[in-house]
Length: 87
Image (cartoon, rainbow, N blue to C red):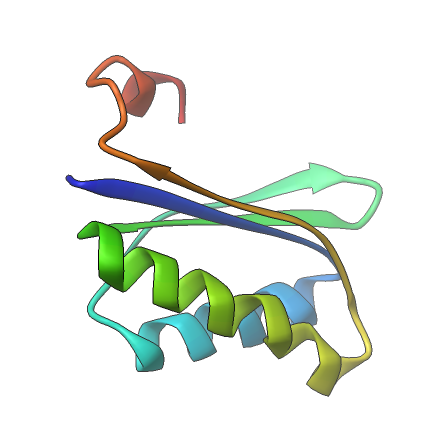
């Protein structure tokens, strides 16, 4: 695992659209799909740094198609090995 990327949206449909767009845009794998509460859904992906960065950029724009709301996004390059236990 070289990088972790996260996209958080308000609405399940927007999160699924973001995940679909990210998976098609770059060679990344889904790590986790978490329903946080109050309509917030976080999609966590992993892959090499360049792939995750480009996938997150595509995922940031995907919510527009569904009318959902992008809450946040983040890329963590070279995460500490203990971080995967938390996620």
